[in-house]
Structures are given as structure tokens and as C-alpha cells.
Image (cartoon, rainbow, N blue to C red; front, side, top):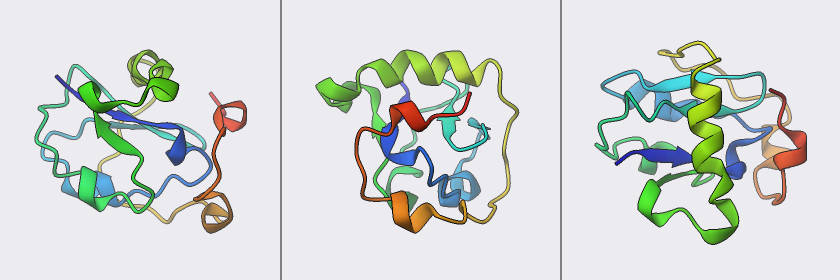
Length: 107
């Protein structure tokens, strides 16, 4: 079992979750974070740290976010590891409550 970063993270990329991850399973893209399912140990410490509630256990991924399971796995293979907290994107607060952000994802 793993955790999944949903569309809520796109164009926000708050990195509070990165600081608490004991296994460094987060990967960083230009405007999104992903979780490497091969590294995640299902500890769940990242979930309460996300200010936009973008991280959920795989078994709880909503129906309209199921595509994010494969997307996390695919992008985790390409993107570098992130192990230290960084500032959120400059306009993150403008995007944090928006939905349907998948077209905004920069791969």
C-alpha cells in the first residue's frame, strides 16, 4: 500500500510533507510533488502536514482522482527526490482551492 498525491497539489507544491517523510519518497516536478510507490512505507505522517489535503492513502483515492495513482508512479520514475522543505510556488494560495487542475500539470 502507498499514498497518493492528488490534483490538489498541482500549482501549489507545498512541501511541508517532505520534511516529515522518514523514507524520502517524495519526488519533485516543476509544479507538483509525487510519491514514489516503491519507496512509500504507508506511515501516513505526511497526510496531516499537507495544507491542501492532497495526500491520501491509495485505498481512499476518490473515483475522480483514480488516474493519479498511475500518474504518481510514472512521474516518480522520472523526477528527482526532494528531501528538504522549500517555499511553495509563488501563486500557491491562488490555486489551493481550485479543482480540475490536471491540465495545469507540467511534466
